[in-house]
Length: 311
Image 1 (tube, helix red, strand yellow):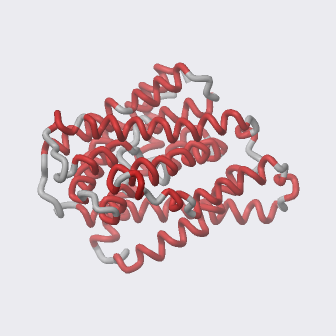
Image 2: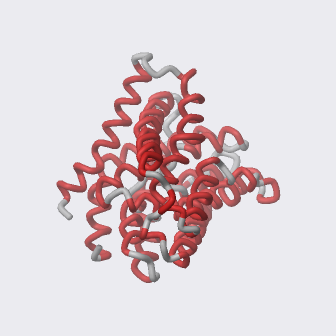
């Protein structure tokens, strides 16, 4: 797969973010609409996407692979969070000044609305259903380990992991293994596909608008900016690549890990930091720095990973 093709698949995602940022800048996408858009995306559009991409997907017929994907989603993200947190004393980030938030935000890459369009453009829509099985483990890690590192693990709201997207993935998997695909009328299949296709552009536009809101809001702390970019883009991806190289993963999952290895920090970690007593300014800097660096590195990281793994 040529670097030009990979670049053509990744650039539209960032162009969409820029469009969302400009819409916010010119007042075409006001903050008052954010909650409604996100509710629409997570409660209706994403569940439709999950049902359409999972039910009847032959890449998910091996339940053992699905379990392995989810387990790796939890295990790799957990390891990344703890490693990032453990390195904070060496990076000059003190506890009470963003150390725990740095561990959380640097340790979790974007596994959703930024990754989905890139994976679909590179490999096809059936890969999205496989990505969703990995996302189950990431969500579990996010709400247990991720929030736990901010609040204390006894206070982590693990029940919040059962979000509408997670529930829709679980329901879709149950329907898939029950053989429900043959009973879904073509008209319903098309409806789910059309509604699900709306989830990605709406969400990416909103991510771009959110990033525009964050620009210039926090004092730059260069140790956080540089160290988060180095860890998220160049160091932590090796956990994904080594897992893909040595574990019995499917071809689909190995290719998905190549894309996941290139992803910046997840924007949602800013929300978690604000809501659960973290250091929101640190999360903002991590997201902004890794996103800016990711614009330039994503095609090259994906290309290198695919060549190194031979996929």
